[in-house]
Amino acid sequence: MSDPVTAERWFLAHEGRLLQQDNHILFTAAETDGADIRYNVDDGFGLAVLAQCPAGMTAVDGLRSLLARAVDEAEYARLARASQLATWHDQHRFCGRCGNTLEAHLQDLARQCPGCGLVQYPRISPCIIVLVTRGDRCLLAHSARFPAGRYSTLAGFIEAGETAEAALKREVHEEVGIEVNNIRFFASQSWPFPHQLMLGFFADHVDGELAPDGEEILQADWFGVDDLPDLPPPFSIARRLIDHFFASQAGLND
Image (tube, rainbow, N blue to C red; front, side):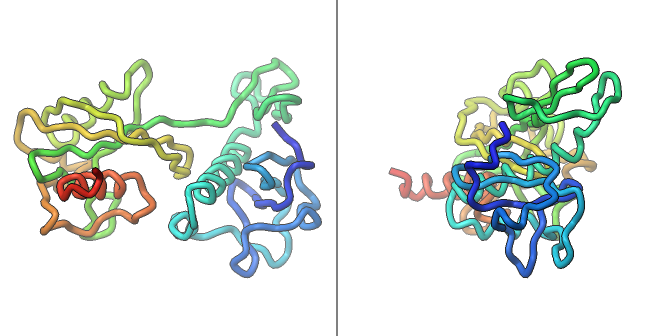
């Protein structure tokens, strides 16, 4: 729901991207002139969508680096929410049913068509992300999208009609050809690239040999604590899964 009164500091956005000025990404109410609409992000924080990019401001280049510098979960969540709202506002300007320009909903965090009444809420795409384990080793894979040498957990989108558990088994089998069981939920994380909700799991290898699909996954192997490759950044849920597993092996999670 829009409520400019509650915000003391503002993220600014234009054409779906957060703005910065001299490495600052939070602004005062006086700097929100020309806002198309305003959204609450968190207590004391708002997002103002600007029709024009003010002189001296530029789009944030490197949201991942901003998230990596977040001092705590609350700051990470604010940045993720502001970024996702900016993207959603930019990509949902018109009604998908009749083509009219959408307007702000009077009560909900949503946009509504003045013609046919269709209401559009911010898009969230649920995904599974899983660390498959076998004894004291874990499965890590190199994706075609990763930098050279980077390995991470397996992940994929949940398809219509699927449970998270079914999607996990499907993705693991499609990407590396093995079967898993004993699926355990670990944690979730908002992932604003651009609007994923990552549902993190552990699962045990039960059958099959690794056979990367060659398209999504180029390489995959079992790794122990003493031979880990280059890993995702510490703020990511993939890294949290990996760190938690090896901490458990060392008895540090007791």
